[in-house]
Length: 194
Image 1 (cartoon, rainbow, N blue to C red):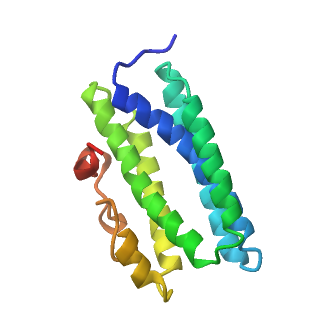
Image 2 (image 1 turned 60 degrees about the horizontal axis):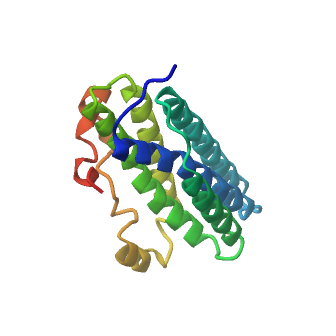
């Protein structure tokens, strides 16, 4: 029997993350496919796709544990988004898929740390390690995408417009100075109420 949680913001966040990970996976299938002449890049994007499928599985374990059903609306919405983005990768060139994937991953970092904050509001800390690992993995993805576009001529303009790039991020996680799990609750506090 699953435990039930009464925390609408956490339930919504879990449902959104579950569906969003599938959308990201579909987008990365298209992104990898568009890199047919760049084998090393293609393989790296495929690995990121696998990471996203694994995150979806892990989020589903949490949802099952607390009796949370997937949102039909999010499943449909993010399915369509993921498929459209994946197909667009074949026609928008190399730069934009990397740029927007990096911006997406930058936000996803906080998704898992905010999830940790929400669980803590209920006195639940047993998922900290898993949520930490997923947040850090998303940061690794962001850093990979930042490196892939670091020298692109369009980058300064896109960074200015979209507020993301090698010099701008939407989270406060630093892979070179990672805090241990117990201290990681300070991450993403500024984005907590979004």
